[in-house]
Image (cartoon, rainbow, N blue to C red; front, side, top):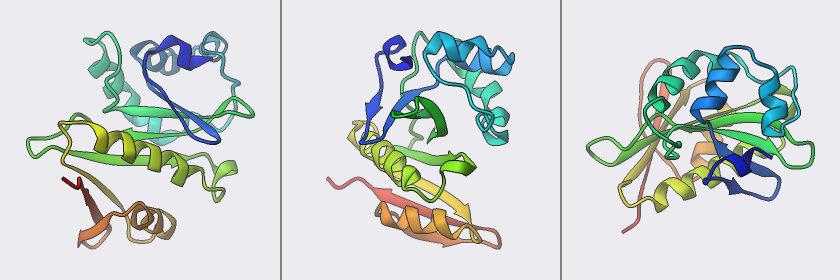
Length: 175
């Protein structure tokens, strides 16, 4: 399984979360379908989707100079029972000067509305807040994305502002 190739992973009731590595990102970008077999994952037609493919070049470039991912980038959400990637999410980089990290997540269409996003995002938030250099987690979503908005509030995040398109949330570490 993929988690054996990395020192870092998290498990929830139904998921294994593994940070995206340089090798994995490179092979996915090169459309190397053997990467699934190498990592012990069952391939599906639904993943990778457009969002992850848009950010993978930057992820690969950021990971090219580090031996292993540090957890502040994207993570794969692997469904334990069927052993395939049902989504991805994580943080958009290391903490900023204020100690904030920004959370994002996505679940493939066939697995939405089953609690996977909540399960994965809860694990990521717990991990993020456990890091000594993190003071807060931020997130944003489209105003029309009621499911994400409700999930962010369920995670304990507070709406801090809104513009014409987006709602911005924050969860401060309790000290």
